[in-house]
Length: 408
Ligand SMILES: *Cc1c(COP(=O)(O)O)cnc(C)c1O
Image 1 (cartoon, rainbow, N blue to C red):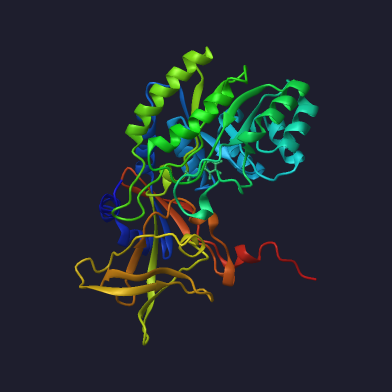
Image 2 (spheres, helix red, strand yellow):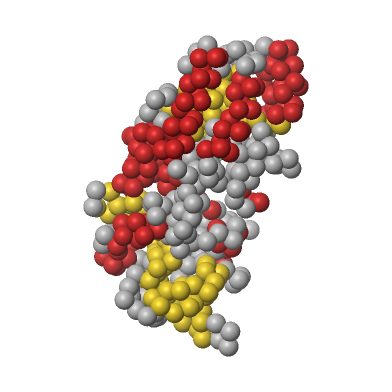
């Protein structure tokens, strides 16, 4: 979806009314758009046994989880708490893949006890897993193919210094352990990074996985992680899902006939399913003219949406209250005692104190990365579904922040 399209979907919502009812700042989600994204992905891989495992670290609201569950999605969970949340949302244990990094073996055992599919990402845990379970419990192995996709250094996971996965160069060692402990490896996994722009990168990494797959006779699925890129800027190149679907379907079918069995193809999109469906609505507290710039100070900050500061991520912003205003250049900042700049030298329709701004692409890694710094409560979350607004998470209060504090 383009930024323009994302803006027009927002403008079709009764935003003013929602802000009046639920207050500001506010996370607003377009539930229908999430469903449409899920359907688009499934349609693109229609010729394969595709399983979508939504990466819930992107947005863990239980209503988002249920919406996708209803569409037939599974989950990719990276902590035992995410596994438990998925189970509470109603997912079958078998629909959940547990892909943790640097967790204790105890946490792996907990996941096995809950009946979810475990994805092992280091040799030490693989040995312990084999020692305890032999071939009684299948596992998936996370491979680092060392294929570096686009994006910034923060979100690349395939490079040589990465802590994620077992290096493809350690395959011999993996095979030794698997043979010795009689481990039933039912899946191979890779997740190369967050931005994959063309099917060529995907295929290059996939070839390594296909190669490795030949040495594991018990496979039921190959999991290609995520990397689907969505538009954050107007002219961003995004993953062409239909083109990717065509190229991968053909190659995957050829692989399966070579392998001798039709395997499932898994993907774990986070951003693709929920990023563009989310907007962070904020109110302008002050306009501050300095010698260097005009600051727009809003009633939110890095405590609610940290991506601009943490990853230097661009998030498009529009002034909902003054769509016809003369465009001017602003620096949009938060109210946190840190340099929490949402946008530098950004052209916005003239901004006045009290105006409502919308920060786009806030559906993924927005609320889930939020915090209580400066003792600020987190915003409420509202989901639009078939033209109706639903409160899906209440605004926090000071009581929430103090809940676990105890007196000496
Ligand atoms: C975060 C993550 C994803 C989702 O990545 P997106 O860029 O949000 O699509 C998928 N798989 C794993 C293992 C992850 O850690």
